[in-house]
Amino acid sequence: MDSWDTGQLVADDKRYLWHPFTSMGEWCAPGHEPIVLVGGEGAVVRDSRGREYIDGNSSIWTNVHGHNHPRINAAIRAQLERVAHTSFLGTTNPPAIQLAREIVELFPGGKFGRVFYSDDGSTGMEAALRIVSQYWKLKGSSRRTFISFRDAYHGDTAGAASLGAAAMFGGEIDGFRFPVRCVARVEDLFEAGDPQDIAAVVIEPIIQGAAGMKIWPTGTLQKLREWCDDAGTLLIVDEVMTGFGRTGRMFACEHEGVEPDSYVFAKGLTGGYLPLALTLVSNEVFAPFLDGKPESTLFYGHSYTGNALGCAAALASLAVFRSDKTIDQLPPKIEAIRTGLAKISQLRGVKEVRACGMIGAIEMDGAGAVAADVCQVARGLGVLTRHIRSVITFMPPLVVSIEQIDSALGVLNESIQMVITYKAHDTAVPVPT
Image (tube, rainbow, N blue to C red; front, side):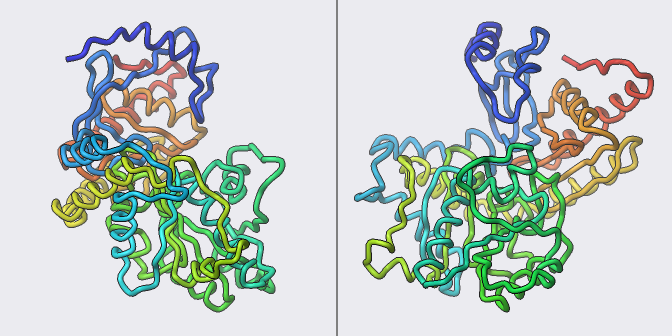
């Protein structure tokens, strides 16, 4: 086993790093020791002090087949022996070509035909917005406005953030942004007046993630597809979180048999190994970009677009889905999550529990401080997860065993009871070590 100087690592982290979505004052406080993760196997990760944790949030919703998966490891090593990265501007590479073909073939029927690569969910959504905006411009249309839904989160880059993140996190961005109209329900679109300026509607299908794992009413996606068809506009679905098995199907749209005009995939695309995203568009949307005129060039991209290592990892991940019949293995795990959450729903201090496939949510009464304390206690008891305001999320890798699900939800059950008991007596919650 490797030997790590945890004290020095923590000191250097506090001295040199800036973590996202983190109060750095609290992080850098003298009494706080961050967990330094150094290894993992399956659904378990290990820290620099040798402690093990069930990865209850799939390393921020990315890991699918578990950590250190031999097939994905081997695919990355094999590609590394060839070349790690080459430019996608003016050249191409076999893994990017093969992955694009496999992704398109996941959607039989011939509607989809083109893959645009980027780096993460935010840039994948940025690409979708730019593609759709330019599509309508090339068609001579004045459609420029995008519709998003209340509490939506589609990324942090300026354009993607204009769909909801800027308002959600209190960080409105001056300068570049897409014109966006926000609605709460699909029914609100029916009263929105003339839709002739709408370029596309954007939605996280079946369940909203950063909103606190809010599940859409059954039929929402179907209604939205019908409205877009009637209005002559496009539908973009953000499957960054929901894609690759999270909802119990390979893709969330399958639950309602809906095909959008563009998908955005990231997170689980590479099995949670490397940053890679793709925007999949229909042949109809791509057609105007083929006319050879200068204005039909999409002037958007990144230095690491089509990265060979990331594409090799994604190809291996898709192969694991096929060989291990991953989706077919999920129903008993999904039931175990529902059963465990049902027990938690009876606890004092729990407002509501929600479940959607391999995604669980525990909404606590009161402010987010309670949920934060529960996550801290759970860490001390061997389960890593995060909270979104007052909602504790539980989203383990798909490879997680039923025993690990039972154990993790048992820890969350115990942690909630401990926190509520101490809060009732107005005393500080001790964090197990």
